Image (cartoon, rainbow, N blue to C red):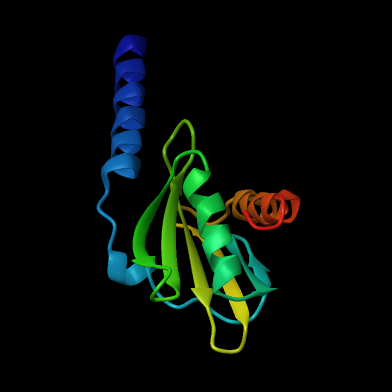
Length: 140
């Protein structure tokens, strides 16, 4: 009996892991202009940076170099890029959108897809990315 329960539990965990990793992404839902008001939420964060296309390019390079992160949609030319970053073990996807505004700002919106709280992971990622920008020598 205990073996059947254990097998059932392992099967459930494997099923959940596969769903999280293989569930299709609706690009139209996630690749959208972010809210323009800085705020923290249980499942993410919105940050606003003063910057132009050069800062957007630099931030995109940092994002593309980040572990388990890839571009979902967008381009520098469009001024809107959305990245997916997956957690190391479960593969939970978090979406980060970078948007260049017409008034000299870059809005960065990082949020989770599954669950209700990201435990501060998205904010920590953005703080790290912005820290890498500040630490990079000028011209890089």
